[in-house]
Amino acid sequence: MKFRVERDVLAEAVAWAARSLPARPPVPVLAGLLLTAESEGGTGTLSLSGFDYEVSARVETEADVEEAGTVLVSGRLLADISRSLPNRPVEISTDGVRVLVVCGSSRFTLPTLPVEEYPALPQMPTVSGMVPGDAFAAAVAQVAVAAGRDDTLPVLTGVRVEIEDDRVTLAATDRYRFAVRDLLWKPEQPGLSAVALVPAKTLLDTAKSLSAGDSVSIALAGSGKGEGLIGFEGAGRRTTTRLLEGEFPKFRSLFPTEFSAVGTVGTQAFVDAVKRVSLVAERNTPVRLNFEQGVLILEAGSGDDAQATERLDADLEGDDISIAFNPAYLLDGLSAIDSPIAQLSFTTATKPALLSGKASQESEADEAYKYLIMPVRLSG
Image 1 (cartoon, helix red, strand yellow):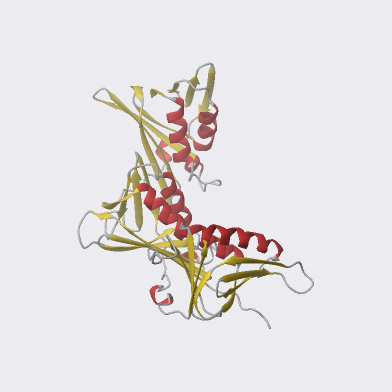
Image 2: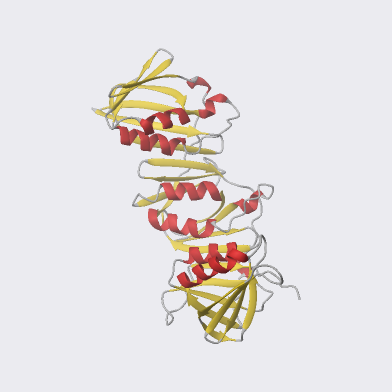
């Protein structure tokens, strides 16, 4: 095998393909990146693949291929080397069981791993539809903040993806908050209906890495080829991940539709105030919100501990309410709504509140994104 490729092109492709390689691979070959150089009709293609039995990644780029071939080398080592090379074309070739990397006056000799022991990458399921890359990345980021991080409850570490015709619904929860986002997409066939539970971290990393492309293809298998997998492809990059199993909570009935009070406040001022008052909130202690007509009073700390209060201009429709939240969960929701006005809708001080965004005081709340947050019960 022998090919030449631009340094930046190589470094970007290697970094992307190697990002999901396991830190402690169960077998040595899974620490490797599979490099395949092909030449057909005068055009050369270099593909780099990584796989850890859960997540597969494959990226394809143009290269000047002199001799086709396949080789398996340490992914992390190749990523470190590619990143540090001078800004010159890179030549990679095989010499027996070694790989030579030459760039300008830099020369590296790397051992290879046994290609025959490397597992075959899973087949990509059939494409189900397309979604704009930037919109998909933003939607996943809004929802993934609410996903659980406790691996003993794997079903809560996922994002539920529901597809109904031209609408995709993403949902995630860790039992203390629930985030739901609707977005439109272009299905391959009308009337498509599918459900998948995707590991949140993998989905977030994938959506972010594909956001530069105009569109992302989502491939979700029914039964047969690719069952138990979901695939994403865009800008020459392709990744698959195994789906999680388990019963995701039925969330639609959890979201209240009638409220006793609705408060609105400028999002950025709200974020800044929560950050300031929560400086005195000891670990696991809440920030208290007191909504009254025309004002929101934030409080944290009590007794002999440090205390903080801050007042913000706010609008309130309905009854005055005092309610308390975990400040980190509240900030996650406020950061995700991506609107100049934050709207909090309440039923009672002991039941979940609904956070959504508004473009202005006069406009309706954006129904595409909803963040339901459990309050913290106050003693006394």
